[in-house]
Image (tube, rainbow, N blue to C red):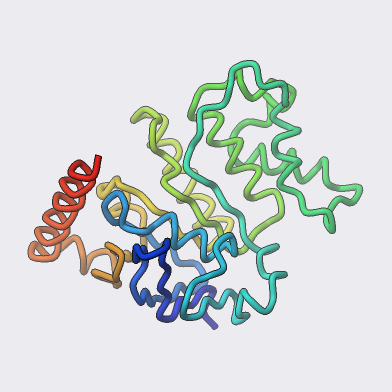
Length: 246
């Protein structure tokens, strides 16, 4: 059974078509890299998958269940949105932030242990009482991963999680993704502009620019000069198009 099946999904903001008949599937243990230029519809696609946008056409099934008919499947999903800068004076501790990820049905006696375990997985167990605003950008991002994995999700969705963190921190972050996918067996869908990282980490690639441009094995995409050329040209056009609009 597929972990995720997207079948002919289209979505419009008013008269603007943001997604045009997108179809792909993800199997257990996959680490799918989703690439595409700014404005390609990646965040819109994630919002549909997470049940945040309901007005799409087509169907989305997670663990075999249509998400419009069974919202319980969302309990098996962890989500890491695009990184936001957190105010240095924000009063919450790391432990408090991670606890927000625990669904009410799982707030049993062991929930403190689960928070510690999640912080251990991301290498932050010694900082649980620190305020999140005192951490570096990379550490804050690891706190958000701990929050996303504290419920032991079977599927993790990450929306450009490494944007705005330095190269060394990015490399540590990617090593953590590899560990969560390889050792913890979490299936992942991860959008990124870092083609080099996608090439190294992802088992498969879905390239979208409103419609599906390519979906297949990572090596099939990166070893095909025609695909890479077409991708960089479409990214360049999207970039120019966005600047025309601004």
